[in-house]
Structures are given as C-alpha cells and as structure tokens.
Amino acid sequence: MEFKEKLQLLRTNMKLSQEELANRLDISRQSITKWENGQSFPDIQNLIQLSEIFKVSIDRLVKENDICTISLFCEQKYPMQDIRIFLVRAKNNTYITGENEIMPSQPGSHDFRYEDGDYLYMDTYLGGQKFIGGERVWIRNHAVWAMNYYGESLDENFDIIFLKEALSHVSVSMPFRGPELYQKGDYMYQCQVQGDFECFSGEERIYCRQKKVYACMFHGGTIL
Figure 1 (spheres, rainbow, N blue to C red):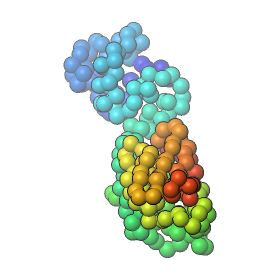
Figure 2: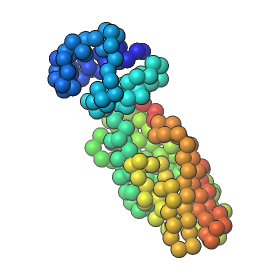
Figure 3: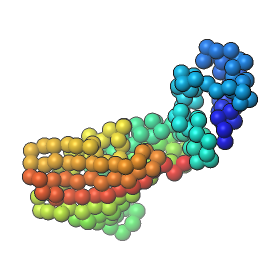
Figure 4: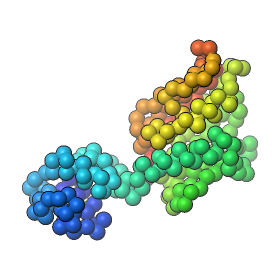
C-alpha cells in the first residue's frame, strides 16, 4: 500500500476531513488532496506531524509493504508506547516483588497475573535451577505481545535477590528483562537485545567476580 492510500485510510479512520487535517498541520486543504492523489509528498516536518497525529511511526507511513501496513493500523489501535509502559508496571508488580501470584495453571508452574484497566499481563514459568516460561499481554482480551524465555543458574554464587534487583530496573525504552548493565558489589548484570519491541531476541547474564553464574535467553514481539 502506498503512502497516499495509507494517509486516506488513517484520516478517515480518525473521522477527520481533509480540511480538519489541514488545519492541524497549518497547511491548505489542497495540499492534503494532492498527497492523497499522489501528486505530491509531504516534507519531513509534515511527516513528523502526521506521525504524531496518527500515533504511528514515520517508517510505517512511508514504507510500501503489506507488513508495515498491517503494523501501522495495529499500532494506531494499540499504541506501542502504552503497551511498553504497562509492561514495565506489570513486571514490577509480579515476579520481581513476589506480588500477584495466582494458583498454578499447570502442574508445578508459577503463575503471576496483573491487570490495569483494559490491560492484562500474565507470566508463567516452570522449573528452578533450570527454568522456562513466558510473558503475555492482552488488551481487552486481544493478545498483543508475548515473550518466551529459558535460563539456568550456573554456579552456587548465583543470587536470586540480585537478579530481581536488576530486573526491577527494567525501562520503557527496553521493557524486556533488565537494563543493559547493572552492578552491585561483586555482581554484574548484563542484557543484550537484538531487534525492537515488535520482534526481538536477547540474552541476560550475571557475573560474580567476573565468573558467569547465570544466563537466560529470550525472544518475542508483538502479536497484533
């Protein structure tokens, strides 16, 4: 789908007339008409404003492929930033703090559930020294994001309290596990991620006096 078609669909989906959109951009209605007819193309400043109005990235506005078009409308319906913010809040109110643990959904599983308005987060894992699990986010009962993980403690010096402390520093900009780097005393936590929020993979590690004592691999993304 071309930019001109995306613009028209986004505008009509927000129930904006060409004149109303033009007023928001402080340009003429004729400019909007030309964009939607493919006779001209907005400059970078107007693209930035369109991105803010429709709450989608510039990349999705201008790229001409079906995947970006699907993601564009999903992102408009479920803003990625809102999901990121909720995810950080949910993580800090479940496994990290030990709050909101619920009855096991599977034999031997550990389950956490956190809700806030239309948003629901669940984290389920199995195991101990070696563990496997997954985190999920729903909005109004629609699955929007998921992550699977597998890890193990590698040495008796592994400290679960330090791991949870590191995970408590999860950020909206990197809402997967913990921060890129966190250190305290003899311990150092590292987290490396490839990709972005919509499709990623990564690994977190803990070192005690430079010896690796813990490792966990994870991957996931949006499922809109």
